[in-house]
Image 1 (cartoon, rainbow, N blue to C red):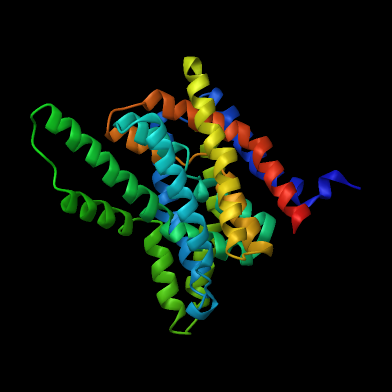
Image 2: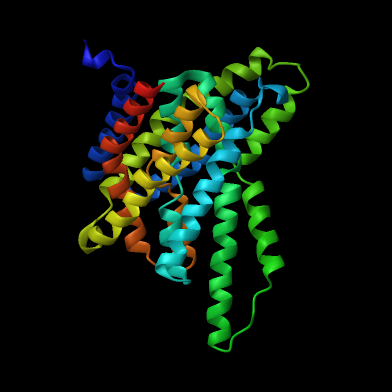
Length: 318
């Protein structure tokens, strides 16, 4: 059997080669820190909205299956709660728990799933992506604000109102370059008009640029990440994210009777490495920034093996 032609190898190899090229460029300092930030803005504000809107603009509501959402997020939220309970109720604990449950579904997941499973698999993933940040980051924001309020009460400071915190988190998650184009694309699809060629072609070109640029950026970021003395703590987070979450999601989906391609995409989504949004939380709340960065880097490297194993196992089961 030709190993290079195996679906897992054929879909993963381009992903990790682009990450490796980005790592090489980062090590050679071909891209400055300012350049990384500008490219990230380009990806999130222009390229990915184009891809998401175009993909969802042909999906009718009756074609959507919301069971993947019902299977994925209870498992992720349960793991989040267990992680916080294990480490204690504080800002550091919440950020570490988020790192152990928040997948990089956008910069790595979209390209990987499209290569491996085509448009049908991508629609399932985008169903998750549409509420991924909304659910996990909103819950994370509220819990983090509760920890801040608790610390403020202990220090005699001003209390934070939970309702105000929750509204701010929900609003920020909805008015976002990821959920917004998905929702707009879905609404447009219900008109049945289709995209005119003069609109569809530019969106296609912009969307096709998303994959390679985003993966190169992952590699550049990885090259600038120092694992250092955080290796042991980061390893525990990576076990949660790369191994425990996909198993819990898979069991949850299986219990709901989800099989075939949807089950595979759910497990692969859970097995993806840590998403970059977690670092933004670490920065905002000024806690565990070095550990979060180290965990993201280690999770991405380890995913070369754990994600490959997850895809191979699901391919065998399927």
